[in-house]
Each structure stands twice: as C-alpha cells, then as structure tokens.
Length: 102
Image 1: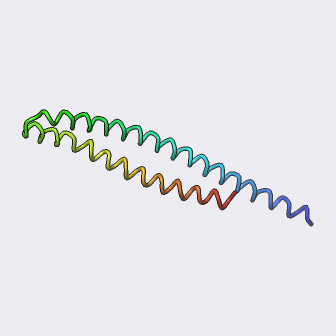
Image 2: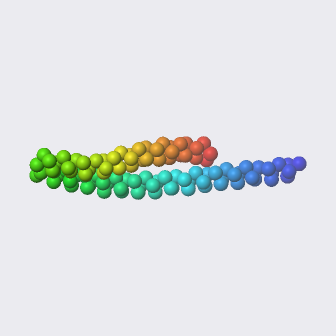
C-alpha cells in the first residue's frame, strides 16, 4: 500500500518544482524589464538634463518652448517609474512565494 502513495507524492513534487521554475523565470523576466526601464529612464533624464543646461542661455520664450518640448519626456519618466514600481511589487510577491515553497 505504501507503493500506491509514492506515485501520488511524485506529481506533487513535480508540480512544486514546475511552479518554482516558473516563478524563477518570471523573476528573470522582471529583472530584465527593470534593467531595460532603468536604461531608458537614464537616457531620458540625460536628455532632459542636457536641455535644461542649454535653457540657461535662452530667452523666456525659448525656455517656454523647451519646457513644452520636455513635457513628453517627463511624462515618459513618470510612466517608467510607475511601471518600475509595479514590477518591484510583483518581484517582492514572487520572492515571497519562492521563500515559502523552497
């Protein structure tokens, strides 16, 4: 009778291993997306900083135009930061799940 229970345990272990593997893969994907977002954010911020340094030499009208030009970039930075927050929350959740499974 002990032999009959062994096969029932094997699928549970396989399911657990599969779930752990899936969670680890998801963590890797999150880390990759976070890296890409951070790189993009860094480039946008560098562009904004460069434009701001130029702004010092411009008249008020030119500064106003520059502010209008930078608005979409600043919006994109905000969007990136929101996505990073979502990903970090998801990452923390997955790491918590992994800790309880391992």
